[in-house]
Amino acid sequence: MNAPATRAGFVAVVGAPNAGKSTLVNALVGSKVSIVSPKVQTTRMRVIGIAMTDLPDGTRAQVVLVDTPGIFRVAKRRLERAMVAAAWQGAEDADLVALVVDAERGVGEETRAIVEKLKETRAPRYLILNKIDLVPREKLLALTAELNAQVPFERTFMVSALRNDGVADVLAAFATALPAGPFLYPEDQAADLPLRLLAAEVTREQVFLQLHQELPYEAAVETDKWEERADGSVRIEQTIHVQREGQRAIVLGKGGGRIKQIGARARHELGQMLERPVHLFLHVKVSERWAEDPAHYRAIGLDYEP
Image (tube, rainbow, N blue to C red; front, side):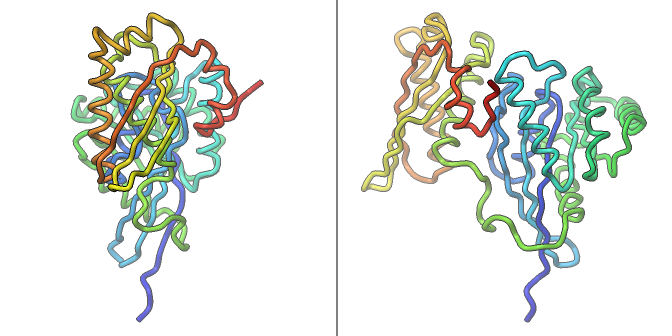
């Protein structure tokens, strides 16, 4: 009996900060591979999520989604420049590019700049209007016409990634458009991210979720130790880097209450993701110049510009 035909390839997911790219990637994969928070610039690295699907003709497809950092119109800081470079590199390397637009926010300067840049890409382009549950139908049709007038898209989709509405149609379209060929990753793998890095991202998400009104996005988390224990559990030690002493006090909270809450939620989520008990220990350190440290950029897969 012949094995089923297979398709596989890369889809770069690009868009302005907070357009919902990470939420969409998580919905397409069916599990959490990228952190999500109300704060812009949450995704700093190219995160790869792997979605498997079956097409009506019996073909098995592996859609490798590259969740890129949000693209800024003017990237002033070194970290922002590195994030933008990573985003466009992901688009250039992909078999197709999906532009995610926050339908409620509409077409801002950042999205216009991305659309201009997309004119240079050779890969097929797909448009995904996200958060459609918050927008009247007339506005969605106007947005579709406006964006397709600037650059022709192969197809336009309207989704609510948060509600998983329309996501299955997007996945089927991606899978159909990818080239025939063998799978690029094992079928049971959901992400291409080292566990130490994934654990750091989970904790960083909790820092953002709980402190997004008080703490600038520059906060970073590093996994210092990962110890597999004989009882099947794992002990993880992490450092939360902030840039000023006042920020350290915010993360710690009164009587250490905030850091305990961050740790408890991150530990719970990591336990679910790893499917085993997690012992998580967090430390907060003032590292004024971590955003200028080349080692930090290498650790999260970004290029350090001199």
